[in-house]
Amino acid sequence: MLSFGSLRGLGSGSLSSKWEDYGGNESKSPSAAQAGVVTPGLQHECGYYDVEQVQRVTKALLVTLARVCVERSSAGELVMRSSLMSSAGTAAGGGGSGGGATATGAMRVEGETKREMLEYLLQQSEAYASGSGALSNSPAMATAANPSKVVDDILESFVRSKRTLLTRVSSKLMYSEKMDDKIGDFVQELERSSTWMIGRREVIAKGILKRVDRSKSHHCAMRFDNRDELAYHKLRCALRPISCNNPGCGDVFSAIYAEPHDASCPFKLLPCHLKCKATVTRSNMENHCVTVCPMKPVTCPFHHVSCPASMSQGEVEKHCEDNMGQHLLLLLNSLQNQKLSIGVQSQRIQLIEKAMAVGQRGEAGDMGSVQSTLREHEIRLNSLEQELKKLQQDVKATDVSAEVLQLRREVRNLQRQNCNSP
Image (cartoon, rainbow, N blue to C red; front, side, top):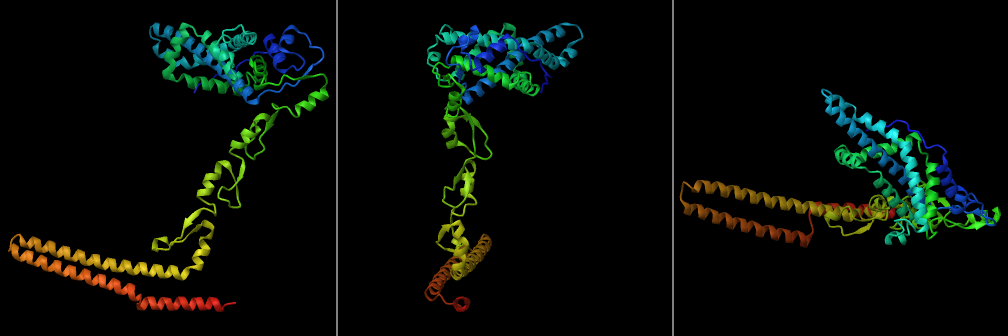
């Protein structure tokens, strides 16, 4: 990861002052600010902007500056490498100084690039606002409802205007070295070093949004002749900035977007979808409903022994307490059935093993006697199966065994004790 060090700022030149007039001075309109004239009468402007649009443009300014600086420094690095490689015996030295050249080049061109970008924004936004620019003649931009999209197109046009042949070549060559990562690193370095502070970028963002927002739906242009009327309006302006009150969120947005944000905020507390008494954040609702919610539908823990009951998760304990005797009987019957099934399977295995042994001996002896023996075993097997079926029918018909009778007596005793207990 490259480190570009601390960078110098633009200062307080004439371009910055112009943008402050357009974006932050409530007593001047864009045209009046440029001429230095105060509008008589309605002098107090609301000055509220669409918070989301301002944030987008504020970020786009920094990213565009980083893109152009890195591309320019990469072009300079390409020249330096070519010069070093053409010198005898300096190939290794050229490879070791590439990163430093990029960082130094980015620091050197940052201030100049920022001034050029602000001049370009000033000219192109004026042209767009007056309807004389290339963007204004575009059918798509002529009816654009999103001013940040217009600003993105202006910034992209600026990037293209600064790409020389050498810059385009260096961008292709540097692709293998992750140009996007270098741009991201430079953006982070600009944010850390406070070279172009967010407050000053917001002033510029507001100024350019005010110019390109032809529909006037993303900035409030209302003016008042006294401060009391202005203050009253600002308390109710649809574009006034507010913050989300949901604990853990803290997003800031214009008041007009309060309902859409509230309808999708992941931190909003909502009553459980399954109607339990808990309140859960929207982002955690699904996990709550499928894990800990007491109203989650479940089956009885003894469903594998044929208990058909289904209930909410919070009723499982009471169901098991109320049906303890029935569950024990079901469990005992299941164990008996498993025991009978194991006995039958054991007999089958023994018969198969004997048949295999007889078959092996029959290879050297009389095949007729082997077949006779197999038939005898088959008859015996059929007889055993019939006896097993009869035994199962007897068990179902009588439902009597020493263990079952004993268990039932114990269950009755438990029920009597529960009835007699106070």
